[in-house]
Image (cartoon, rainbow, N blue to C red; front, side, top):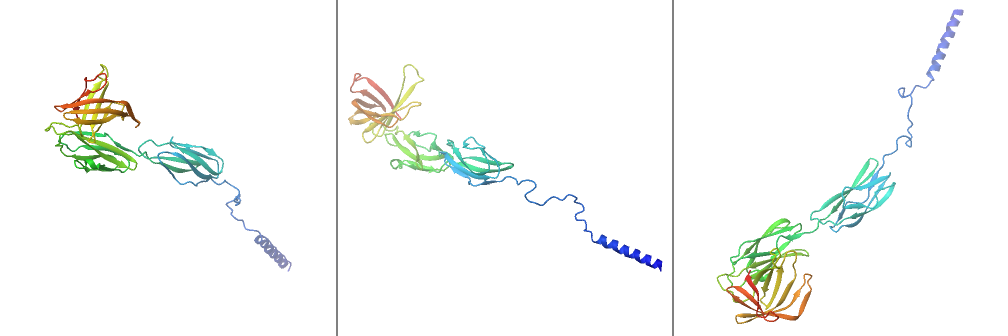
Length: 339
């Protein structure tokens, strides 16, 4: 009996111990002995951010001032990759920012592009700046001289804008535009008919784009089959030298218009735009010329207080001009040849 009681007490003790073990909490995440707090306010800070407010900038060739706007959550810097963009501020503290930008004038005939770079920490964003080119409409020569037979000369045009080309009305009977093409460097081909008349002639070709116009004057010599007896519509030239130096010379062009007026301009390196003007009339084989004034290179017109008078005659297609008044009256003044 005693043995039975001892066995029962031992069995009850085993059950009690198992009950205590079963009430203990199981071990969670046994591989992670030091779990990190999930608090979002603890740990590594957020990376800086840059937000661009200004869209890309496009300016005219004249340049000027502009502004760019952005915001940054950290300290920032601003730089430009070209020297024609200047920034009024290049660094600052976090927040919303507006920077004044100065763009230099573009004197080139090509569009140019630049970047403004905004950086904060390891984050960078860019704003594109585009500046238009300087508009160009250029011809390599403003005059064409042909003999009586005419031909097919070309006008070389350098342009970065569209243009049109036309012949002035009074020259359409003998100057024709054969072909044109716009943009870059192109050639305009003309067709010049033969001049069977005993007088020289000239006409203008106009190359136009907006408010820009280039004028190319076409000179054509008179027919050599006929002797020139009239000044109307003719042009003559002579060259004189300054002292004994042949390195300094001036070529003067006398052009007689059909309305009874003439101009006398000079072709001299570095100087242009000035010319004398006057009137002429025929007295049989002799012509009477009156020099009345001059026009300066800036376009101002001046009238002589005492006009100068000349006489002229054509001998074998050479024009001789003499003083008709003044201290050198009667002396040979000029000997001119036809253009």
